[in-house]
Amino acid sequence: MSIESRLRRGAAMALIALLGACATTPTTQSGDTAGLTPDEVALREQSASFVAQNVFEGAVVNAAIGCVLGAILVYSLTGEGDDAAVGCGVGGAAGAVYGGVDGYVTAKRTQAAESELAAVRAMTADVRSENEKLARLVESSQRVAENDRRRIDALKARIDAKQMTVEQARVEAKLVRENTAQIEQVLVEARERRDNYLQARAQLAGGSDTAELDGEISTLNGEIAELESQLTLVNNSLQVSGLS
Image (cartoon, rainbow, N blue to C red):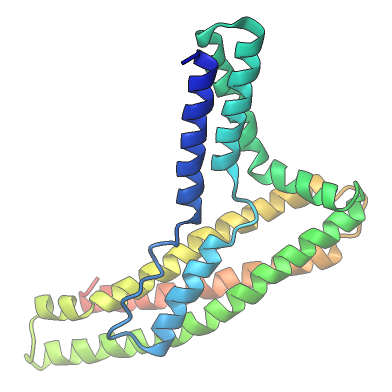
């Protein structure tokens, strides 16, 4: 088998594996919901959906595609396997960049036929969609956090009454920690997307009116701040009660 054929075959197999990984449902969406409240189930489902639906994704797959194209192009020009490896690296790096903020901005401009104003409006619609999903997550997480604080208070009362040890209470507080982990995962994702939107806005803005876009980004910041507040309250309760 020629080097070119091996490159094509290996890259194809890598792409299949990468595409499969990207399509995998996040681990936050578990089929085992025994013992969970409806709000806890909703939080996990919404969290998995939010993490999976990311308009800035694609860097990993695009990097693999870039590797394939770069390797084949360089090998076809030089016939040297070592040069093909260099081409893979260069193409992969270019593909990875395309999958991030730069790729997102390029896609918005292309969809808008190079109209900056239309691209800004398209980005505004994306941020608004993020806000709608996050708003539902905030509502679910708020109810979960309130219930978790009641659980912690009840466990602390049982510890104080010598009805259980701190170690036993920590075991029972496991679900509370799992709930906070769900919120933390959403927060990490939401902050990253906010930062990406800010970078994209800087590239797209130009002389266009961004007031509506800025308002949506401000709303996104508000949703993030609310999630941070809920998480802080629960974590403080866990720490004060010795159940963290």
